[in-house]
Length: 138
Image (cartoon, rainbow, N blue to C red):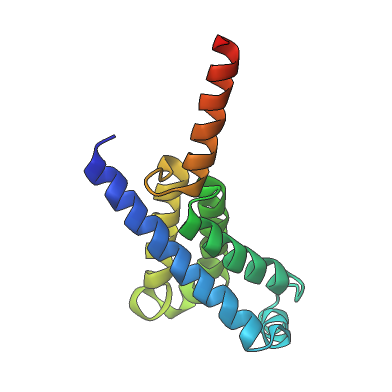
């Protein structure tokens, strides 16, 4: 993969991570009980609010750091599918699901392609493979 593609993937990964980190933090800062109540009011189990908030918060940090990018992005994509179909579809494209659709596509791209540049996961696994190769050759 070209360096330009990796730079693009890095930008997508970090921005998606920042967006989800912000949304997850806001759910806790605004009182997670409010989010639980809102989930209940739209017919979703209130406890799901904790799952979503934790995935957004921890997943956002993971994306920024480049740890488990594909898994975190896939989870973000699932959250966006849920948001589109349970909340925003009724609002139409511009007033409803356009932003969520963009986040879904970015998450899908990262889940499919990963992002190795400036990735803590790449650094950790690269060192594991180098260590293993060194041990095997000794």
